[in-house]
Image (cartoon, rainbow, N blue to C red; front, top):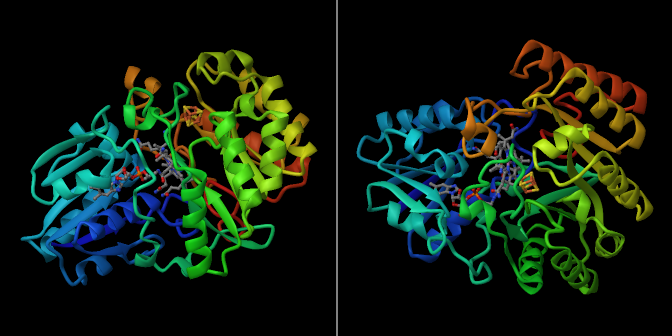
Length: 411
Ligand code: B12
Ligand code: SF4
């Protein structure tokens, strides 16, 4: 079958063309292995996306991917494609389909969960295809093909750290932790940690270096690199022993960022870590089941400094029951521990997260362009206040599209 996977634009990001979306590229690789003719219509950064869509040559099946805030655009694109190609099948996958499949209407098939093999079924079966439960997901990732980076113009993606070009990979999927603001805590596919073996990781990285030698850095999009700590150390040691060198950026869990882990990561080439500090208030951290405190997050920052690793702190305002005093503690934490970079975002209760499922949910982005944040006025004003005051105190420039990429890292 001729399948066209469509990556929608995300205009709410400062830039949606910094690193490509690996999920659909991986699905594409699996479909290709299964004998289908596959291409990718990559609309990231395309402000004329509807014209591009209308001019598309056609396919037997179009597959869209979407997180919650992307869903309205995915629907708009599907409807345009349907007009241009009425007989084509329309299928959906991705994060929103995984946690909110019953809200997704008008599709021939919706894959809720792992698309590696379930997408092949969606080419002929109708309705919701469940692929997120135990027994439905791929447990051993090593035999999977590499993501089909060749199906997008990878060189046109631009993400730099310390002047070097970075591209992305995944060394693991899923996170066993239970932070109540995070999507998928009750969904096996998101909660189950699945990791590639170090040897498989290095084979894929070598393949990337061979085909795209201008990329010297690797943004590893694993939910949390150092869960469990022994995986992080084993992977770091394998990378350090490998002849091909990379600068690495990844996400870490503060309380597991021990001296041993940090040392091994620094040796492997990790130049920057990002951690969800979330709040400076221990009351809020306890409430959201973050398993950290002011002091634990502070220690992680100091450990990163000790090993020469840049530290980015992701914080947010607007969590349930947060007071101005709690938010001021977040500002104070940032002022005291002086991360190399930070975010202040506005919490959005998304479906699939314990908080979102317990009350009213939204599909608004929690991180977007300064000046366009969505939420209660006092919360948005608090975000601006923290962002402005901390940037001024730490001598950091304000976020602007021409200076920074979207949610992770800076130009
Ligand atoms: C890395 C990452 C990012 C990166 C890169 C995102 C990207 N586009 O690649 C950055 C930092 C930019 C980012 C941004 C955002 N992210 Co993010 N991100 C992740 C993270 C940690 C990994 C994503 C990933 O590559 N996963 C691995 C791949 C293999 O999984 P996948 O993409 O879901 O694809 C699989 C299936 O969904 C399915 N599939 C995917 N596409 C398709 C298409 C078809 C047709 C089919 C049939 C199947 C299918 O098959 C794939 C293989 O199993 C996930 C958490 C997670 N573990 O997935 C959060 C996550 C996806 N992000 C999330 C959110 C909220 C966002 C933002 C909206 C934040 C914001 N700014 O407000 C933006 C959205 C930007 C965007 N358009 O992508 C939520 C989504 C929740 C939701 N309900 O939608 C997640 C789940 C985090 C969480 N636990 O809360 N993110
Ligand atoms: S925020 Fe991070 S540590 Fe918490 S559940 Fe989500 S991925 Fe895991």
